[in-house]
Length: 294
Image (cartoon, rainbow, N blue to C red; front, top):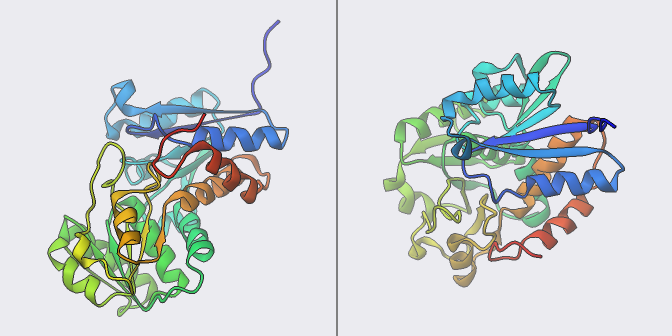
């Protein structure tokens, strides 16, 4: 007898996504809600594809009957030219991490920014936000920047190894939020910017299992500075661990990973997931060192 097609089929496109916890997070929540749900990894490294092939992969997923895709590094900006429509947030950010495939159309959304904002609300509810430094001006950095200014950051300094990219993002932010709200620079500015900041957010691949280390020298981490990292494999990145040891309030990337998944799940299914249940499940999937559990 032919098996019936699962109710929802989604995938994740990106590089080095084998350790991603998005598949078990989505599928476990779907099981709890009584939904048939399949979440597949489409790793460009494993498939021998270049990041620029993301458009072809989206078309193939649409042809195969997928209901949606999550998009991660390094394809969040490259995918935009291959979509039929963008949500207002995705258009403003110039980065997409969620694509809904329905009615013959591919519509891009961004749940990274809302996931980060909810994580900050939950983990740093009373943190000073007057001056914040953001490391990383890529797709994830753009989402974090949007979230920080939406949450009320007075002045955001965006730093990147590519000064032009940081200044470009800062200019886009200034156009949306006000000319005095953002400026850009490169890593040579990190010491000066951090010394005057209330908080620092790290949004580069440094600290991931495949990219160990920290982008922030330990001597720049003073107790008055709060530190947030978007990396969640491992949760205890070198930056998070060092910042905690030096007396900083810290926020790891686990909450952002869960809350962006909550919002993506809703877009894919039209069903409201239980965020607390997904947070609890995340905690069973990974320990602070980033080691899979079970």
